[in-house]
Image (cartoon, rainbow, N blue to C red; front, side):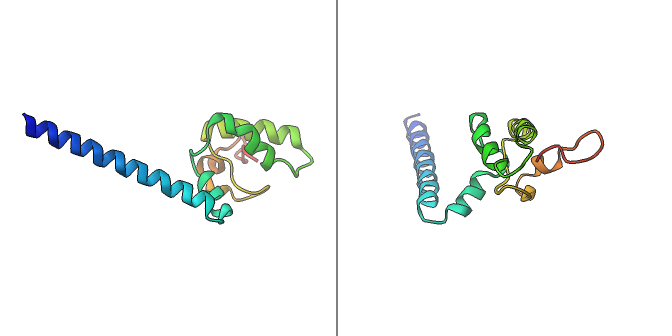
Amino acid sequence: MAMAKLVLVLAIALLAMAMADSSHKVLAKATDGSSEQYMQALNGQGSLRTFQCPSQCSRRCSQTQYHKPCMFFCQKCCVKCLCVPSGYYGNKGECPCYNNWKTKRGGPKCP
C-alpha cells in the first residue's frame, strides 16, 4: 500500500515537471525574436479565447473598406473556430475551420 502511494506521488511529480517544462518552451518562443512564427502558432486552430476575437478581427479587418461587415463575420467565425488567420487577407489555410465555413451559396463565410 505504501509503495503504491509512493509510485503515485512520483508519477504526479513527473507530470507536473513535464507541464512546467512545456510552459517554459512557450515563453521562450515568445521572447526569442521570431514573433511572426510565434503569432502563426498562436493563431492556429482553436488557440484563441473568445475575449481575444475583437482585437484579432480588428487587426484582420484593418485594411478593408468594408470594415463593419468584415468585423461582424470575422468575430462570428472567430467565436466558432477560435482562430483568425494572420495578415489582412488570405492565409486561411492556417485555420481550417475558418477557411471551410461556407455561406448557403457556397462562398466563404469568413473574411
